[in-house]
Image (cartoon, rainbow, N blue to C red):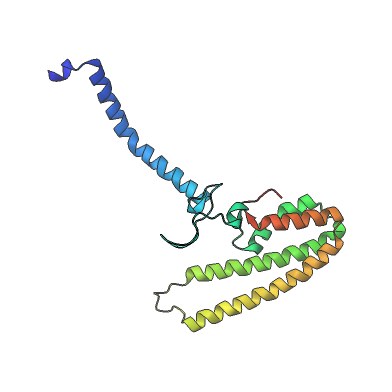
Length: 193
């Protein structure tokens, strides 16, 4: 009987309360999702205009000093991987001529080999389990890292020679675009140059 004597505002409040209790979990999940996406886009909470905090704790050093990398885009984690991702569109945009194709292909192959070396290293590192019974010793691990670095250095010296041969065949306009796009690839996200 008491429920029948509820006035209109009380009924509206009950309906609002019920609807809110149903939507609150959805709103919370959406808020968490958007905050995670924002953190991924702007790590450190710096946002577009903010800088990364540097300096020492509660006392002393400067706080909220803009970082050059933050104001100009983050530097690519792996410069060769960034160049590798740029190659297909760069080839089209530069309008590589048939007489330039052999030099372009040699350059692209060298970049791919260097990129594959990095991918293989990352895969090996991901498969290494420090608590496994067959985990490599520190000496083995450092030796492997040194060998991988040496192999990648050899590949990179080859890429250096191949890019020199390619640049010698480029027109002035192609060279300008090549220089600009390789520099752009080193910034993530891409900036306007």
